[in-house]
Length: 262
Image 1 (spheres, helix red, strand yellow):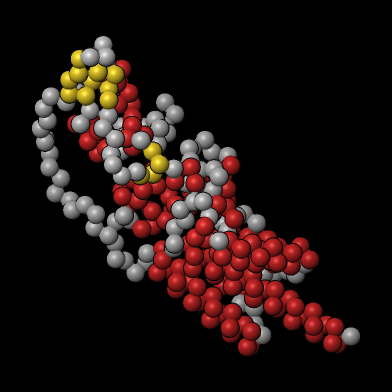
Image 2 (cartoon, rainbow, N blue to C red):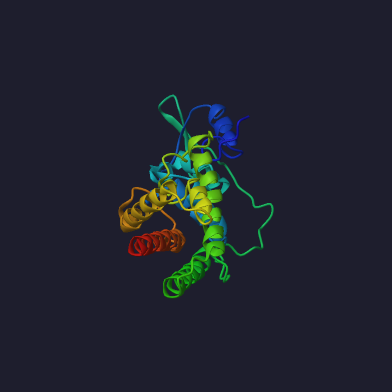
């Protein structure tokens, strides 16, 4: 079958079979606290920051709406808890618990919820990248250097990540991937910036002006965008903002030299 990780997976299918043969309508006890798909995914990915960061880049604002208990059963633990408290309604009068008894077959020995403290977490690596971008930008301004290799690799990585984000959002059939506001700061058009590290043209200048303005607006509105964005994306987006700003500064400086020479 066509696997669907939120609505039709290896946990929701047993739930559907149980509902079909329960002999009545299953009534679930809704939890007091509302949650979203993203909340539940974060609960599972908390020990793995890179996995959480990658998933947050790919799923859009459709994963940020509150969901009922039945929708939360895409996770095995939630299916177990939901059925444990559920009752079956027969002929609008007779009810009985769907779970008559339970027994633990294997007890996990792995400690749950241990958060990774690795130096290579997305936030820490993003801060390191931002510091390097600022240092190269300041040195570029002072010593009139472009550092094309560093910023070219930065734009190339952003372009490859943008190709993946845009493909999943626009072409895949996965749920909750569109609209995705990460498309504003990660996009395939950074390939133009890679080309611009070795060749100057009006198209490249137009791209960097547009990208600089877009990133400025996006970062300013980060907290009010109707999608939960991973905070580790901020230093990465700022690095791209610095890179486009440095390119524009170098272009304006070159134009001033040419004008002064004439």
